[in-house]
Image 1 (cartoon, one colour):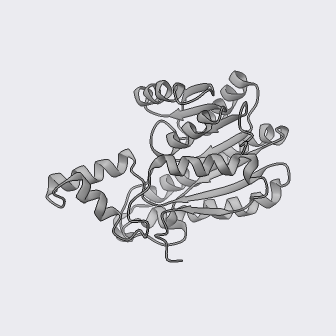
Image 2 (image 1 turned 45 degrees about the vertical axis):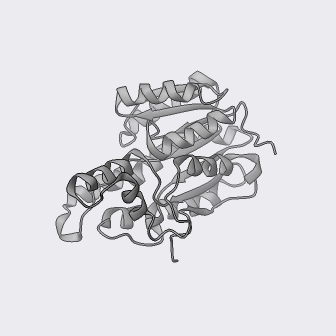
Length: 261
């Protein structure tokens, strides 16, 4: 079946690595032009080079901090200038510090809110006029399974990310039928972050091997393994595609069935 993404333009934030990069790769593979962004220039350049060989779509890399609204405005403007349009927005962001309530400062809360929520608000605000002009405008927000089931020692993520789902459910009604808006709720995937945590566990003696570390992360996943980032990217691209043309306001878990609610 034809996804309808060939020739479209997508902007994927926080996409120099991890799930954002996997999402960008899925769009490129479908023939869409993609803008990626990140704060680390070296990592961003490496991601751009890798994505350019992932499919027929064009790739633009823009160094940007999505917690800076001026950077976000420039990022959207650069996308439209390069590709002439913007059809699909995918919002992603880096993680926020772990910690229990008594360990976190007021500044930690404000920084988490800017990282996880205001970055989405600013990006949607800048992109919306262009998405409305598109015949296929979509927004997909990558959040976390923690918006439904709290995870130990992740108070900031558990609390703050839920605002993104409320935003998605509300603007999906406000923007329809011109723009569809959905969310994706990932569980554990084998990203660089998971690799770092497993390797740290090996060094500390918690795991004997890398495979043992992955098995521990997957111990409560019914599918028996953690996800491949490509699997998450495919869901993101699907939600933006014509194949999901009647999916709006949804929050789709991509976690191997690990959530219990």
